[in-house]
Length: 545
Image (cartoon, rainbow, N blue to C red; front, side, top):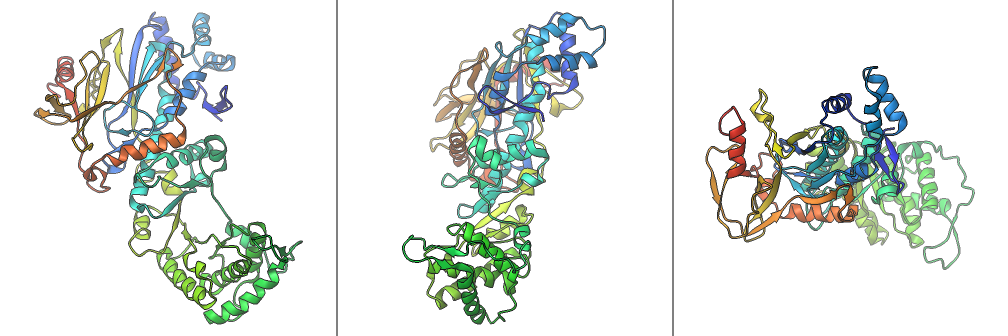
């Protein structure tokens, strides 16, 4: 594993989770006598993911942990010595052993911020050799976290406020670290101010280490492991109120089964006895949290009557079943039919609570199926999503980059043969302009030495990709980049995951509806100040940006 524990017992990335060329460049800087020159890099993305118009910035907390714990161990240095030229000066390896991030400063978008193309998610400054070595780990920590958080926000946008979303992609993720990261940042991702991104995760380690609410019940293997001949060691169950005699639950279930089958027009022999035994066993273990998985054999002829028999037996004792789950077939249609049966049976046996038992569904649910399940009139209450949230199949990579913008206080630019990959030189500040109603107008990038823009000030700016400038007069101006780490020291306590989650909700609530559209959204403008644009043009051989 590429993770280890920091001083607080939390997992952090190891320094050697990097590309070899970072080490070869480090040696090149050292040999050139440039290892300690002041340098600044920016981490950003060029296009919003999934064809959308926004992204959520995530992974900052993991970056801070990584930087604070950064130290090459003897074994790390020894390995680098084995892959670098054998005649490398031993003094270089002594330099590596002494490295830490006490000279590193980071400005960043707060975790959960709205992020747009070209606007730095991180600005990292410090000794050239060291901040070069940080490139790959920081990209790993930010890119996937931001991609998953954005994906979760999109899925919540599709689902709307009334459906509960359960992330259950650990077994489908690209390795254990991918699964762990996805569980955290799908929980952070949000859309509606009144409702979170994903409500919970099946990942218990994410619950233990990062406080993500966990949820889970039973799988088909539990159901199919029972044949029906099993005898519970203790079949007796006390009433929910703890008052009154205990009851033989399997016996009560069998009595209820007769009545349920008569109500549903089924033969008593049709429901699978092993499935019923499994439901009874689960109910004895979790009488206050009983849920039935209905499709191990046949939903209509077995799963549903067996569930109803157990749920009604529990209901007599004052317990309430917490739900059913479907994992195959036409989920929308089955949910509609099941809700109708719940209403009929609840009325028949005077158990009105049965009508509102939640119906959960899963089974490779993607955006298209989620739209169908979330439509008006759907009887689905809980939706479990695995592969589509953790693998981000519409776009499996965020495309973040980490580019040098200044060395020794002098701007640096990358031109390349592809104009799209041209970088913006110099140390920069970023601001968000808001209208009188608090909605977002545009993000502005300017040189760090420029005076900050003020609310009510009329400004001439150059939207990226536009041929002409525009004039804007913001009602409010917000600085975007906050000082997180200064000379290796945290500038403020790291927010909790729930605090970042609430911030993400607040951020997204201010985005205009046209920018939230999943298909063909309006492009959110990012603009350059006149001085920054002039600098770009002066350094570029390609003419005006």
